Length: 119
Image 1 (cartoon, rainbow, N blue to C red):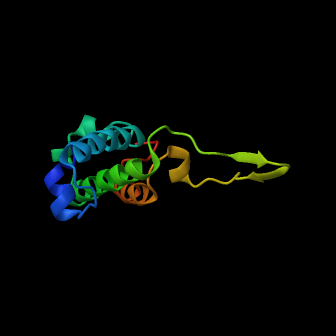
Image 2 (image 1 turned 135 degrees about the vertical axis):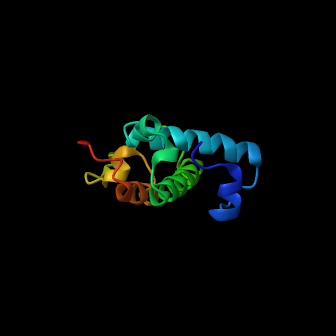
């Protein structure tokens, strides 16, 4: 994992307290980070990233773990709904919403260059 429980609690200062829950969420967050970076971290090896990139990735994993804790990880967003003849549409989504990732995690990962579709 790119970020462990110790990093989450001591460096990131996360709000979750149950170690088993933290570990479960960090694993899910790790998989999401790998997905949005096209598994480049896996391919390159996290130890081969610059220290700057490594720090951004660790923090992104923690942001994503908190995001999953707050929002779930089902990967869907309500686009529109209607109640008693009143309808509301949400057509514009940010890139992070399209990817179902925390906006903070997305912004961190953008800085690493690992999300670029063309390498």
